[in-house]
Image 1: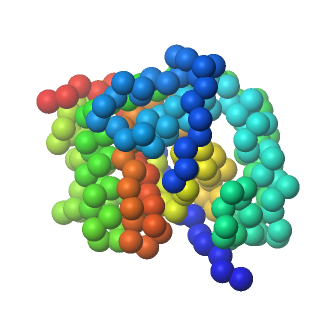
Image 2: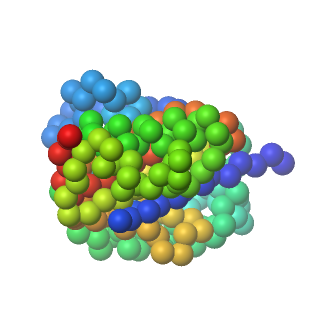
Length: 221
């Protein structure tokens, strides 16, 4: 049986579309961000759907996945190829338990400056096939962001590879299968992070990738 792997990577200093409904309202903060692609806008919206009501998001979109595991293989609804996980369904159950008691967090607003830093890493890895948080010339997240602006409070970065939609990207970052620290989930729940930049694109090994750069505050140069 052919299987695929999903890779998610997080740091802190941490493709189908879902229909946008009228109830999204104020959550759709990236609607007019013309520097983002439709998929990138959808990623911002999906993060805000989660942050505005973690318990509801877990019950509606994450808990149902428990019915689609066979040992450590996940047959994600709508995907043709099973996904081989590290932990199996226990990671989903652990995620749901935590999110059911998680406090809603302020929604995120898109940042063109953070999008530039995310795009720099995405373009580099699309060309080289590399993964992780090290960019061209061994650049760090901090260095990339500071090329374009000045950040406040804290910064973080999540990277996901091989996902097929904005919702799947966010769900898998929240489950954080195989990541002992659950660092991606922590970033998505962090109340100190207020702005996000998103860059999606192709990856020569994992077919697709999504970089999310976060900051508590951001000013362009």
